[in-house]
Image 1 (cartoon, protein in one colour):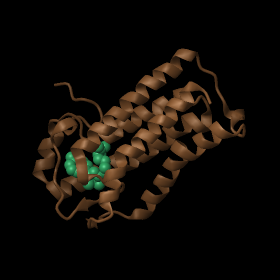
Image 2 (cartoon, rainbow, N blue to C red):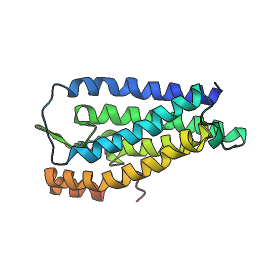
Image 3 (cartoon, rainbow, N blue to C red):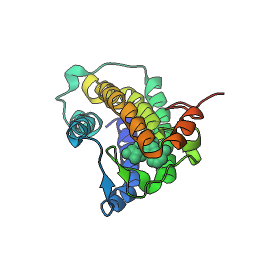
Image 4 (cartoon, helix red, strand yellow):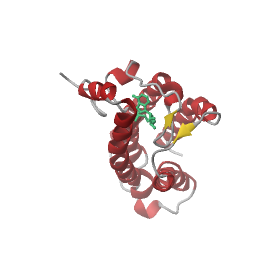
Length: 192
Ligand code: SAH
């Protein structure tokens, strides 16, 4: 394994550890689901293919070598910095969102609108983190299937999800979310 592959797997392990407590806690909670879950399952399947299964095949076998591309060495180190940023934002967002996190679009019985911490600046820091991750992955794993494909998968996931999520939040929190939208950026810091 290259140092960049090791960095990729360490970052993935870090995200699994960060998410584990909310994932476990969630199993005891009641959620209402306004959205169909089938599309979500397909999207999550694609995301785990792009983020885990293809990288695993790439790192353990030569099967995907036909799809390699070559990059100068410094882009690998740039990828390492970017993935560290992705994990940091992911961690901060989990601290701030706490038990309000859910894998699919759902609101809890006693859902709280979080507007503090990193959520005071960006409405979707976990998605910011995933954008950073996807760019970093294409730099750390220079292969069209194991690296770059996840960027495409994430673009589809994000495009289908973010608008629907904001619609759901507007339906749940009304004017409070409208005000919140006006003073925050979607995935980038709002400079005003
Ligand atoms: N889009 C957010 C959260 C992803 S988890 C991010 O990128 O950080 C998805 C769930 O988070 C949604 O089902 C919704 O219930 C919840 N959620 C999203 N924004 C929220 C907010 N500001 N406060 C509370 N819950 C929120």
